[in-house]
Amino acid sequence: MKLLIQNGTIVDPAGGISGQKDLLLDNGVITMIGDHLSDTTAQVIDAAGLHVSAGLIDMHVHLRDPGLTHKEDILTGSEAAAHGGFTTIACMPNTKPVMDNPDTVAYVKKRAQHNCGVHVLPIGAVSIGERGEQRTNFKDLKAAGVVALSDDGMPIMNANLMRDALLRGNRRGLTVLSHCEDDTMVHGRGVNEGRVSRALGMPGRPAIAEELMVMRDAMLAEETRTAVHICHVSTAGSVNIIRQFKRKGVRITCETCPQYFILTHEEILRQGTMAKVNPPLRATKDRDAILAAVKDGTIDCLVTDHAPHSAEEKALPLVAAPAGMVGLETALALNLTYLYHAGVLPLEEVIAKMTLRPAEVLGLGGSVGMLALGAPADVTIFDVNEEWTVDPSDFRSKGRNTPFAGMQVKGRVRYTIADGKIIYKA
Ligand SMILES: [Zn+2]
Image (cartoon, rainbow, N blue to C red; front, side, top):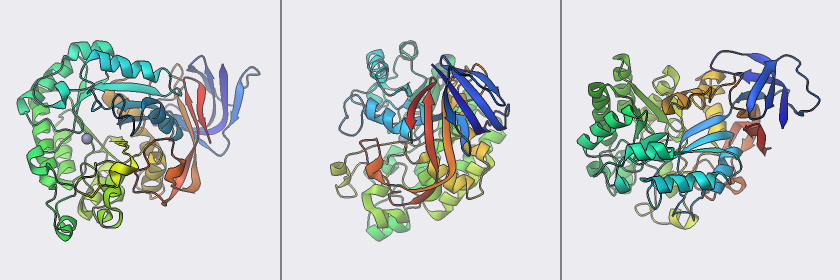
């Protein structure tokens, strides 16, 4: 099937094309890019007044499948991704069982073949059961199709295991995505250590617990000359460390999520468990530092850390409720509202952090994340100016746990196209 996208404004951070152009998608690839294209056999989308980018990529998603499908499953998570403009998502291995073996990877890939068309890329666990003790078999995981390695959700406390994982992962072209928190300083603690934790009379998760691990991983990457990627960076100290090591030429990349440059820990006082996430929402100085690091390029990627939980789970008391928030269906709008419309970043840079950069970190190759001739026909079409109000009852995700409910945002997905097929249309 052919699809002709006419009159859209191209957003191509790779720099090849700009302005108003038509795109012809045929047989799963972009076959023509030009002015006034026509093809009588193609289905036509009139994208006048809309922006057209490569399909969005979210490299940090929890699909909860297998084993935790009351929260989300591969089909609903994929629907949520398509609804949010994502054509590719990488899913974390903290499922039940943990994705630490080729069979579980095969299960995820097989289920994903029956989804709406979103590309689902499995991430393999670094350690068996994410217990941080025994390394998984990277060779077998790679052969099964994982695109990266992570024990996300759990920090890798054993520095020797982390060092070994960097070396062996690097050899196989697998980047380690590190969840940086010193477990001994955060265990059983629900909120950031500071004014809010004191007001609640609770022990908090201190910023230093994240920063110590960021420093350790940066030093290990430097020493081993391997690449490391730091997940969901949330503190001023973390971005300072990453900035310094990048300047030295160390292969360190990182990501953040909208909640870390929009919200602070004060949100816990207003929204309780809806604002509980790991790492926790931080102080104003941290939020401002994350925003500055998004702006100056220290933060490479914008991800969601989409972490669905059931209403029953989030109704538990603050200490007992699970941490996490959904993000797939609000990320583009939040990033456009708080980065592009707020004048922090040009549109190309926002889109680069949601397409090109994650494709680079994961080493996807094959022009994934770009609008180029021969690139996969994965395209997102959005209205950069449409205003709407976040309403979790519209989500395709099983999870409704968002602190952004009721928020006015600007920027909305109109079409999500994967492999040349329309998988979501507003
Ligand atoms: Zn994490």
